Length: 470
Image (tube, rainbow, N blue to C red; front, side, top):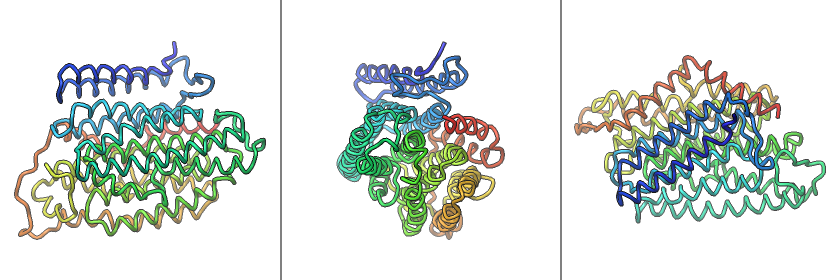
């Protein structure tokens, strides 16, 4: 018996039950959060069962959906991102009753992107991912949150229009909407080239690739912290997954159309993102530019266009996501009622809360790629993929970007660990239980991936090999 789409079906059922619980209690209720969390756990368990079911892998709905090892790994990453965001905002009454419903809706869109093999499914997944995030970004009403939501809506709608126009051109030049049935040698070249360029622009906007990145710092800064963590992790999973699936399935034999361009964009994104992070005083903006640089790292795995690149991308998403969850959990706890936190606000953090300072250090050092963290192993695999693809420029760009980024990550840690005693805030920091769970799991996972990555490497190897041989 195949469990093919049961993870997604369970999420849809959970969304309806969560909505009914919200309507029943008429206000922010803990029941809705529990239903949403139960939905995430249930979908995760079904995903694990799905991996070994008799009907796996499966191609469904006229090849519009491909349930394979790649899509199941994406499911796991997306569920982790949604669960982390939900737990970070668990005890905060500033978030309305719609918060868990919107988190689940965006999560469903990300899961759809992980298995899309059709233009229509791709666009549905993008919109299902984006629309709830527009609302979540503006969920704190007028002010920075409303401004962030409006900017995200306008620029997101513009990018969706570009994406849709690109898909229309590709359909007009090929006569098919299925990725695996695209044959560039039989396409009308001007239409196909323009369609591919516009489609890649629309997808790289969602990923945050330079020069389509300028929405990220403002939206991250203005959005509520749990929402920002969700966008920083989950959106990258969905966007990177669909970009890889689209290019590898549809244009794998014609990398000359897109490989060099993505390589240049990857190097530009890594260097520019880390350089701009150096000048940031607000921690959310610093992590936003860090996210841009990390999008460049992910693009290395796609530009390499080999099995090592697919493996490196899938692996790197996990330590990056764990580090993001840990960093935003610390920001949420230290900031308290505020939504923003500057580097100077971390002064004396090691005296107020040595554990929080230590956890923040692990997250930042993992993003910087320091040994014994998952970020180091992920960057190692990305460099390996670039070298096996005979693209040393990508590897050099990654190393240079990581070296520049190290200075950006060390600066907040310097304030947290070396502030003069006169500047120390003595107010105790409250540790919400749900947020503490996210923080501990994320930090333990980050260190575990740096010390013993073998189990995760085995999973992503299987996923990348199957994906590549398709």
